Length: 170
Length: 276
Image (cartoon, rainbow over all chains, first blue to last red; front, side, top):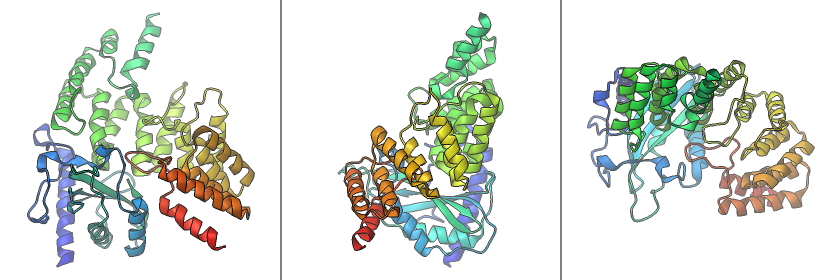
C-alpha cells in the first residue's frame, strides 16, 4: 500500500514538473515553488501556523539549512538507511516540502532530472527510499528560534550516480 | 570615440548581470529600441520579491516585447534556482546564454556548481567563457570566489587534483587577484590530500592570516595527525571547536561550501585524538 502511494506521488510529481514547460503567466502561484494542499497526497492534519500566504523559504532566515546536528545528521541518516540500487541511474532528485512552526513536515513533492538537466524517471526503488527516509527526518529546526516561529519551504537534492547517493544539497 | 563609449556602456550596464539592473539607455544609444523597451518594462520589478507572481509576470511582459532580452531570463531563473527547480532554472539560463554568452556563461557555471554540484557542466561553462573573452572572467555571484578558483574546485571534485592545484596557484600568482574568503583553505586541503604537507602547511598558514576559520584549524589538525604531532593535532581541534562556537565557519545561506566541516566532524576527530 505504501509503495502504491509512493508511485502515485511520483506520477503526480512528474506531471507537475512537465507542467512547468507549458506554464503561462496566468497560472503562477503566490510564489515560485509553492506547494498547494492535495488531498490525495497530503496529510489533512498537517497545519500551517500562519496560513498558506505566509510560508517562507528556508534561506529567508539567513542561517542556511537548519537541522539538529547540522546537515551532517541528515547525511548520516541517508548513509545508514539508504540501500544502494544496482543500476546505471544517475542525475538529481529533489524532494521539496514544508516545515511548519512546530518543526513538523508534509506536502512532499518530487522533481527529477538526468545529468544533462533533462527530465528523467528514476527507478521507484531509489525514489521510494529517498522519500521514506526524508519523511522520517524529525530534526528540522523551528525558524526563527523565537515565539514568532514561521512555516517554511525546505528541499533536499540528492545527487545520484549509478544508484548511489554521492551528495546531498543544499 | 562612439565605439569606446558604447563598449563602456555595455560593460557597465547592458551585459553584466552581476551589476544588477542593466542601464536601459545603453540599448537606446545602440539603436536597439526593442531591448530598450523591454529593459524599461523590467525595471518595474523593483520592490517585488523574486519569487512572486508579480515579479515573474513583469519579466514575462518584458520578454513579450523582446524575447532576446537575456536579463529577464536570468532574473526569472533566480527563484527557480533557490527553490531547487533545476529543470526550469536550466531552461531559463540556457535562453539567457543563447542571447548573451559573455554576460551569462560565468553565472550559469557558478550556479551549476553551487546549487547542483554539476562540476563538469561548471567547468565547461567557465572554460567557454575563458575562450570567448580577452578580459578577466570575473567572480562568483556571491563574490566569495574568482571563477578560476571555482573551476579548480570542480576539477578537484572530479578527481583531477594536480590540475586543480595548478589553476589555484596560477590564479593566486596573478598580480590583480583579490584573495577570496577560502582560496588558501581549498589549496591547503588539496595539498594535504596529495601528501604535500609542507605546501599544505603554508597554505593553511596563509588562510589563517587572511581569514581564520574553524575549518582551517580542523584541516591543520589533520595535517599534524599525518605528521604524528599529537599535541598540535589536539590543539588545532580545540581551536576549531572554539571558533566553530563563535560562528567563524565557512558559510553560505543557500548551500554548504565545498570542504566545509561540521561540528560533529571536529568532535569525532578530537575523540579519536584523545584516545591515542
